[in-house]
Image 1 (cartoon, protein in one colour):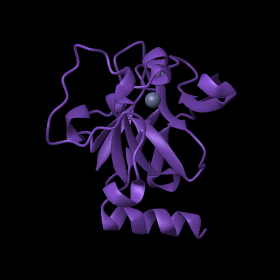
Image 2 (image 1 turned 60 degrees about the vertical axis):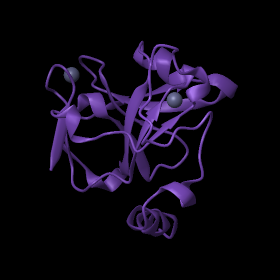
Image 3 (image 1 turned 45 degrees about the vertical axis):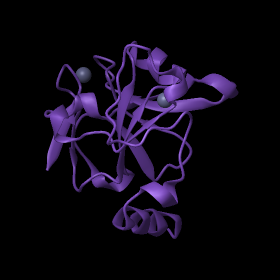
Image 4 (image 1 turned 90 degrees about the vertical axis):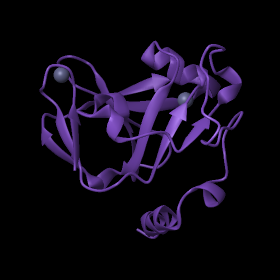
Length: 152
Ligand SMILES: [Zn+2]
Ligand SMILES: [Zn+2]
């Protein structure tokens, strides 16, 4: 099982199952938030993130369109370990905070319209200018998990 945490070690978490899906997002919001070219988000049910230590502090971060995005940060070192968009049942764990970031790989590249020009994407991974149709791309098992969430 995958574990991860912040830089100072106060926040530690474990993912108790495989992700629903893994996004590599090249949008301008993610670039600004990370100070980098893209973010790698591990989508997983909130109740499948087992907090082993610490309690992330939720910060509401403005993003384009006037909306705010909740980002869970270590209260001490302020490293972002996850974010939450519309559904509280799903979190976007930042793959770079995993102890083994190589244990996941993007299932899809999104918002490639703002992809930095020197980033080359692999041919075998689907890529979209903006977003994609979940029903067309997610494996059946993940779609079932999503349905289970909506039924709650
Ligand atoms: Zn920390
Ligand atoms: Zn993004």
